Length: 113
Length: 111
Image (cartoon, rainbow over the protein chains, first blue to last red):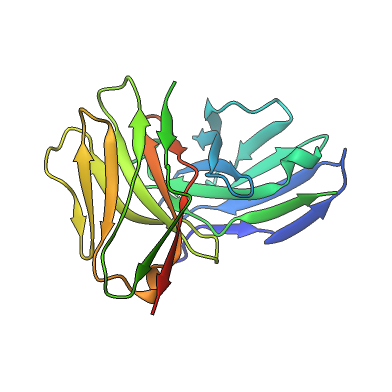
């Protein structure tokens, strides 16, 4: 049973560029949540997708957007990259929108130069 | 505002000894969960233990147990019989409609 997978593992982008990160949820899960973890910090909630719609959003600008596909996989898009967007981006999946049991993926390390 | 505070940036413990990691939180919600997650160098967050706020009994998972003090809004993690594999970052998290994490405690385990 595959757990949560994320791609790519690492990514280097230049300021102003756009990036897309991908997440496949654990088998049987229908909800995907995205988190940003800056160096030395705890993860911060970006948004959550369920039934192909954004259900909740944290305190992140509109440059951060997402999508969920019919197979429950999800993408995180960040436009107009800033140096401060450099972080580990974690995806977590769950069955339903609750926080009771979220399974995390290994993350994508984004470096903006 | 909902917050989670971990006041110990680093802790260390001898193998086979016991260590306690501290966490305080703040929320106005009456229905919530509290979690401890472990993040090893592989980066993947692993759920260690979970506590439902409505339960008075402290959660226990093998060598891991919590001390949940609801009135004090305190949620500490005790690791007994520490093992080298316990070395990692530990994050306390508050769960309402989303997870809110603290800044983490780095645990070192010495042989």
